[in-house]
Image (cartoon, rainbow, N blue to C red; front, side, top):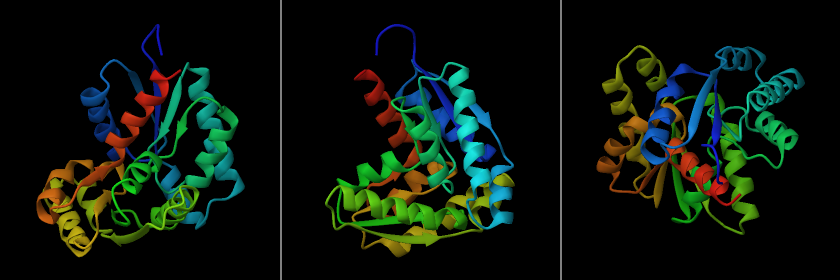
Length: 223
C-alpha cells in the first residue's frame, strides 16, 4: 500500500487487550495509524445471554461499519469469544481486511506442527476458538489438532493489576502442553506472558497481537 499511512481500527471488548496490541504495532508496524474502540459491555452481555444471538451479531456489524465511516483501511477485533459475529462483519466489509483475533496466529501455528497447545484465560472464548481452529485446519488439509487448557483465575488477577500472578498461572497451565509442537496464547491480554511460557516449555510461543499485526501489514502492503 502506498500513500498515507494505513489506518487500522482495533475493536476491543476488554481494556486488557488495548495495550498488548498497541505495543505490537509500535514494535512491528510503527508506520500504521492504529486506533482503539472499546466496547466493554460485550463480554458481560455474552455471559448473560449464554450464546451469540442475532442482536449481538448486529452490534458487531455496526461496530465495524462505524470504524469504516471513520476511515479504517482494515479492522482487527481483539475479542476472541465472538467469532461468528466477526465473520458477519467481515462479509459486510469485504474486500477490506477484517481479522478475527486469532486467525493469523492459528494460521501461523498450523505451519509449525500437528499438535497445537492453547492456553486460555477466558472460558467463554474456548468453544468458538476450537471451532475456528478446526475449520482452518480442515480448509488447509491439515490433520493438526488443538489441545486446550484454561486458567480462568488469571484474567481477574491481571485486571486487578497482579501481572505476576497472571503470568504464573498461565505458565503453570502451559506446563501441561509440553508434548505440543507450539503453544498459542488465546487472549490478547496474555501477550506479556510469552517469554515466560517459552522459557518454561521450551516451545515456540505465538501471541495473537504479533501474528495479527504481521498479517495485516502483509495484506495491506500487497494492495
